[in-house]
Structure formats: C-alpha cells, structure tokens
Length: 348
Length: 272
Image: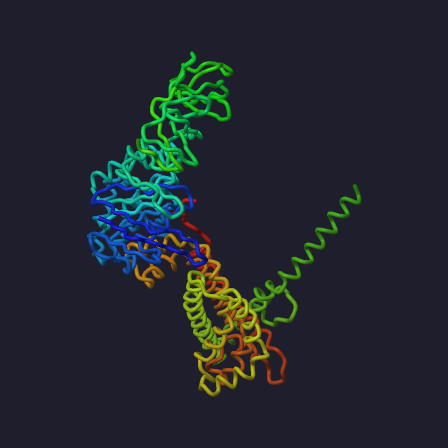
C-alpha cells in the first residue's frame, strides 16, 4: 500500500509541480497517473521513488514513513521511459544487477535472472548486449530487472510510450497479465488515456499538480468530474457545448432540451455528450441538434461525422456504411449526456 | 587542357613536398639508428646494430625509460582519478558559478605549467622536500594537466544520461557503487583518452623534469636525451636517434593498445 499525504513539491524557481496530493494506492492495485505533459505526474512518480524530495507532505509504503529515506531503502523498483538498462552489461548482468547490490552470491543471482528471463521469454537473449535488442525486448529486460528485486511496489514511467503502435497493444495486454499474476502494487504514469483506461484498476487524472479526479476507468469515462477530464478522456473528444437555461428548458446548439431536475442558472453551463453516445437521424426530431454534415472521417469500423450546427460543430460516430453524403441535412440525437455547471459535473 | 594538366601537376608537386616535409623526420628516425655513421640528413644506412649496443651501455638510458613510465603512469593515474571525480561532481551537482570556475581553471593551468611559474614551483617543491622525487614531478605535472582533463571529462559525463544512475539508485546502489558499476564503464573511452593524453604529455615533457630532478638516476628519457652529447658539445646523432626510437616505442604501443581496446564505441541501451 502506498499512501501520500498532502504532498507538495515546489521546484527552485517557484514552479509548483505537486500541490497538496492526497492518495492511497491499495495492495496489488494497478494505478494510473494520467494527465497532459507538465501536469506533475512524472514528478509525483519520482517523488514516490525518492528521486525528488517533496517540499512538504508525507509518503508511506506499507505503513512505513519513507519520506526521508533514500530511494534504495524504499523497496521499490522503477522502470524508466527510456528503460535505462545498462549498455555495458549483458541481459543476465542487467537483470541480476539489483541482486548484486543486495550482495546475493553470483551463482544465485544468475539463476534468479535466468528464472525471471524465462518468464518474460528472454532466455534466448541472456548473453546479448542492450544494443543488440529490439525496443520491445529492451522493455522486457527493464521489466525483468524490476521483477528480479522483488519490490513492495513497481513504478513505471510511461512504460509503453517508446514502442510502436502495434507492439504497444501487445505489450499492454502482456503488462496487464503480468501485473495480475505478480499481484504487486503498481503505479504507472501515462499521457495516453486509452492506455490508462485499458490497464488500470484505478486512474488519477492530474492537471497543474493537482488530482482532478480519482476513480475506476468506468467512473472516469462515464462521469468525468470536470470539463477538463471530459475533454481528456475518450479516443474521440467529448462534445462540450455551451448551454443556456430558460425555465425548465435547456437551449443547446439550436436544440431545446428538457433541463435536468435541480439545475440552477450559472455563469457557464456546458452540455457534454460523447460522439459514441449520439445517433444520427435524417428526419427532423425535436430533441436533436439540427445541422449539415460537413466532414466524414473513416475510423475503420465506424465513421466520425462532423455536423455543422448553428454556431458550433458537433461530432458523432456512426457504424461503417451508415454515413450519409456530405452536405446532407441531419439531426444528432443525444442518448447519454452530462451537464457541467461552471466546469464541474452537475449530478441530477 | 594544358592549363588543367599544369594545375594538376603543380598541386601534386606541392602535396608531395608537404608530405616529404612531414615524413622525412620519421624516415630519419627509422633509418638513422641502424646507420653506422648517421648524419643529420636521411640516407640509406650502412646497416649496423652497434648503436643499440652503445645506448644500452649508457648507464642511464634504460633506467630513464623506467623513470618516464613511473612519472607518466603516475601522473596519468592521478589525473584520471581526480579528473573523473571532479568532472562527475561538476556535471551532476548544480554549483553556482560552475562554468566560470572551470574556464578560470583552464586559463590558469596554461600559466601554472608555463615558464612563468617555474621559480615558485621550484621554491614550493624545495620546501616540501619534493626535489629529486618522482612524486614531486607527478604532482606538478598533474596539476598542470588536471583543468583540461576535468573540462574534457565533464563533457563526457554530461552526455551520459542520468537515468542510468537514477535506475541504479532506486535499486539501492551507493554513490561509489554507481560510479564504479555505471559511470566509469560508460565514460571509459573518455578516461582512456585522458590517460593516454596525460601519459604522452609527461613522456615528452622536459622543463619541469629537468628542473625538479637533480639526480640523473631519476631523470626521465626526455632529460637523458639532452645529455647525449660529446664532451665537445657536438650531438651524438647515433645515440640520439637510437634512443629516440627506443623512447618512442612504448608510446606507440600504448596508442595502439588503447585504440584497439577502448576505441570510441557506444553500446546503446537508452531508447531515444
């Protein structure tokens, strides 16, 4: 279990990279820190590892306060974005390196390295140098080295970002299965929302050194707490349309929709609807956004349709083959929508 | 057409002259030691090995090569160890005014090893009882080489990604272990370069060795070369050429060894 209490990191020069982070990662949990670059997620991971010293706050691992401990005494293993496997050592020596530091006898650590390597299908490569390995193999060596030292928790810094797209999907499944089998608490950093949704048991979405929302992938996807999370999560961005409340009716992009119960007027009302949660209608509907089809983007099994409505653009996804030609008047019918009041989710 | 041929001809002749200018001394070094009566010009030798026998009879010749090895090797080791530690610290720790310090040191080093500092250095060595000791020579010449060595090695250290070290730190390696297991192997080509450069500098160095060592038993080859004259003051070309050849062999061997063993290679392992 990793718990962070009121963790703050201010860099010399005054940049507040972490701003009062409170978080508990449960035993065996696969936890993602997700956010755009510069949001503080890597700083948070490095602070947990001990590579950065927090300005204030407390870090404990399995109920031991490690805030003042050097990285080596925290019982963690970290996999870096560039893998950082030592170029002058072969695969065996690399994997066995943590054991060498722990003064494990040579024969024992070579055996352990071979055992871990077998698990990650690296047996054939044990005598190679890093330069003779592909990106995916290097990544597995870095993982093997982390596994070999039997840590209390794994820290992964963008573990998949250096792999090409196809390999990344393979590595994602592999990583998830491996984490499930080892059942070791894992915190990983990513800027890829799809990766976070696919891998993590829970996700923390970060922005400007704060945690905006913490929850399961389903919670984060279905009920983003703020418009920032809403726009960040999802492979096609959510439509966030300015709305105006008039009595019991909500005026959004040329449509008049019933307002949810309990909604009071505010400076900024936003109507959010994912492209996947809308249907396209070619006949006029009262509860739909009227517009003209202006762009069609082929996504393979689906097509992303851009509808030009009065004053704004709305995107929606239709199954392949169902897309009408460009220029057709059409109506977008929302099935599941969220209302944001001053950028935060209004829960009716 | 003629102009073109003439141009080519002139260029070729010019290049041949330049080449001759640089190769003739080398050729002299290769031929004169085997010549019965060597002169200052290069000529086909009357083959003999007597010159080698004569130089081996010189009481100081072989000992001076040993002295050169002690002084050059000592300085090389000292410079590499101290420069590596200093360069690593300067590369990894943010010290205010670090760059100014480095440039200042580099500037001063050329003054310190120069003739200008000769008197104070001699005075210092006398008071510290370092006259006529190998240690005295090693310390003084190392002092002159260190700033440039730190400067060059810091560049090597700067180019080594810090994630290697951070990775080792998370596994619990101590700073000294990180230095031994990770940093030194990674910058080994740089260390080898500095070692070769330091040894070669001391090997050819004359002034400080000449001043700091009174006893010919301790003098390095470069100083002994200066004694190979007749009583009348005429250079003994047979001995000078033979000794020069012998004296240059260890350095050539070292160059070959180091370039073969530590040639500039990088093994990868960081995915860019």
